[in-house]
Length: 420
Ligand SMILES: [Zn+2]
Image (cartoon, rainbow, N blue to C red; front, side, top):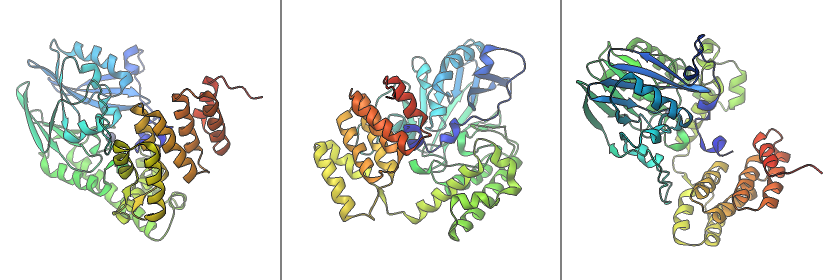
């Protein structure tokens, strides 16, 4: 269940309708290659939904922008070689989200991987005071604002746009080809989206679209992380829809409407087709809502922050004690939402700190006894600890609270549990 809670952009994993070619070609189910110019190719990695990548292929070899999903990494590596004789010399990541970076490790042995500095941080798994988790394919060269690469006869300009869709957003401008790859700063054909729970900001995201319009020549072609290619005119339209609907939703929230009420009110009826892609009406309303909460709770710090600091210097019993003290004495200073401890617990699991994770998940069970998800997480930690009995107990508890939890059902099967 970690995805449900930690991935602010779980929408990216939801199936969307794909236009797969009629001709059968095994690789086309996972990868499509589209030639844009003599040197520039667009590649679509397909896994449920699809992510666009860009490759410059020529005398210097191959420069690849983004690497797609982990499961499409092998086919991407195999197919990209067919485009030219050279090797992949450089990989650039447009931002830190999984569907853009998890193919990196397939190129770690041959390419220099470049990104904004925040991508390296996020990709290495650094979490508050906890140490980073090292992985193959982590960016080796990072930059702050701008970086220019001279490759295949043109200047390739990388520019960071701060704090919008994610923390590490970068546009990659192929100056001679007049092609700009903007990653997920633009969700072409859909409503915009920002990873607010991990540092993104919806209003900055929209401002960045305006900056993109201003920063590049009017006749540029814009390639987006998902969806169709855009012209400057398309970008203007996209921005207008984003700003207009964001304001409308925000007005409803100010009136005290809930997400469900806004959804039922058909507020977005005039923009029906915009909600039919990877960002549904509900996701869009929720994104505006998260932004609203963020703007109105600016001073609240995640409870995970003081806890991770405590974890690095004292044992878990002290950490539990600190949590209880803070919850009692400073309930308004910290964000005690369910997902905060859940993310922390999974961060500990990823570092093999299983006993600590169990104690953190137990605190969440205490705080949110009606949530199916907190029991599911605790069960998973017990499973990691080799405690089959307690893992079964809490998966059953999770199912009791949330009968739709198929993950718990699958895990019980894996644990060999049979109903009496
Ligand atoms: Zn993204």
